[in-house]
Image 1 (cartoon, rainbow, N blue to C red):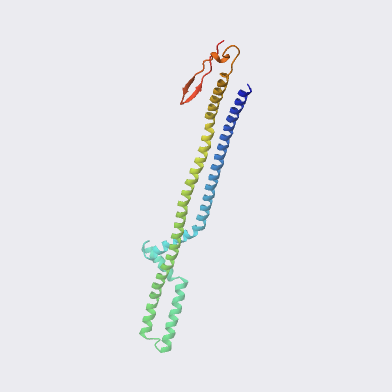
Image 2 (cartoon, rainbow, N blue to C red; image 1 turned 45 degrees about the vertical axis):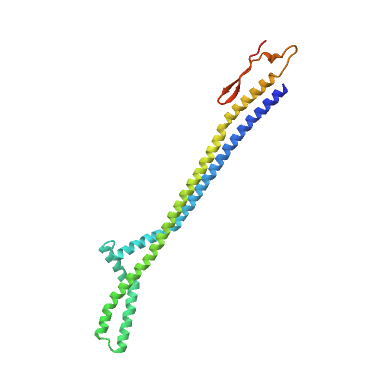
Length: 242
């Protein structure tokens, strides 16, 4: 009976090994899923940091776009007048007017035409010309900020799209890892059932090989048969005769 004992030991060991393998696969799946979740958290952290860094540029660009719209009247006449008045009273405008008018007066004084009509006409035209030029310059300056904000916003959008794709991929990996571990763990009962069938077939086969004195042995009257069970062979117990 040592042969049967060895067979039983091998089969039981196989069942135990299958169970351990299933548990190890499930644990590995949990580890992979946790690693995927950690990757998602890190990418989200990096994205939040990017948004934090780019927010000032986006904000500046948004404000500059509003300034451009106000200067050209897209926000209404009141907003346009307010923007132009702010330029008229700006330190830059006042400094340009002072320097320009002093230059005109000095030139007229040197030529003796200080009270001439040309000088007065030049002085009258100088302020509107400076203001018009300053409005154009201001619009271009604001346009630079607008473009910078637009680029920053586009960078945020691109980073957000990449984050979404990466997170979707990592979630798929986490799901696959978890499912793989669950499948491996779920396969253990089926493997154990197959091992149980194997041990039964082996034992009954061994019993059929014993011979006794004066006859064909105790198993000579055993009626053993194999039935079809789900596509496999199931050993049914022998009917012993005495």
